[in-house]
Image (cartoon, rainbow, N blue to C red; front, side):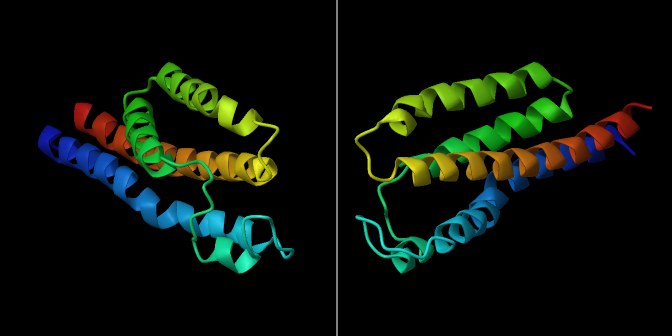
Length: 140
């Protein structure tokens, strides 16, 4: 494999990681929301399953895109420390919101954070590993 092909695969992995997450992660979160059958103070379970704005974890889409880009690049370049930093920064950034005891949706927000983060990291790490294999085979 040529270096140009490896770089193309690397770039494709990063772009796919950033963009695909917007299509792959929400179904996981919808499954989580639809498993709740009783109405909440913010609406019915149908409101949550349909992707209604619950006010939970606003800005998560952009955080997820940046997270996946960084993790994909970090895995591709064999830099696990960068992955740990991303997870730590994300957790610390959301801690006050997730810890707010006055929020009636605290448990749901925590679950969405964990499920979304794990699904996003799995996608990004998988694509980063594909890019890493491509880069390694080009270097031989």
